[in-house]
Length: 217
Image 1 (cartoon, rainbow, N blue to C red):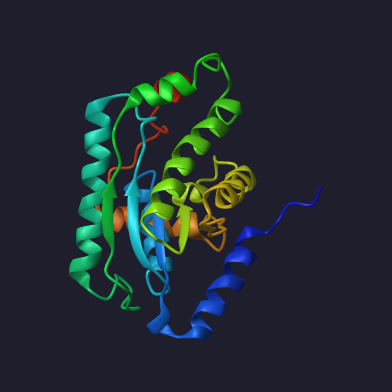
Image 2 (image 1 turned 120 degrees about the vertical axis):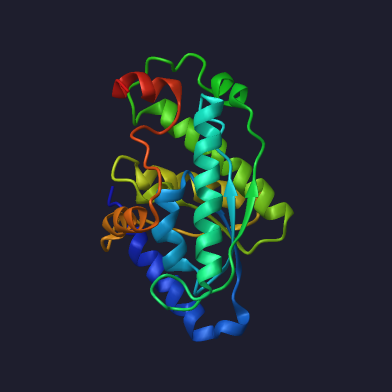
């Protein structure tokens, strides 16, 4: 089975939006896993969409870690909005943020029986579904045109699987899925540079107790 080039799919869609003109900018409900991953994605997409960042990550097991990460997310968005035209002077729409409910119990309930799965396996796929399902539901309820996630910027995340989940949820909830593979075209490299520029806290594990244990941190 041939894998889809989701970066090319995204570029086709963005070209269509650009042709339609800025006055018709659609609304994007963007799930964000963390500030560093969202840094490039926001820089890239804010000229095409009116973005609301949805910070929903019940997979982060420790409350202190969660609070640190969500504070960094808000700080980055404030910095982008204060700059007004983006850090590269490319223009763009103001960015909003919505914080989802932080209930780690939802993640642990989902992960039952999958505790020993290796990182990047079935437990991670179910975690993607948990977070994207909430994003799709909230996005559809809020009347957004598209929903998406920053997760595909990570070289450690399965972009093919993430997009498959997003497409399935799009059909289920009636909201368009924005395909992506943000790590391509040096997206991941750019996120590292932006993290350094803004002094962002970059964690070395996804947030859940299982990845924390496997990473040995």
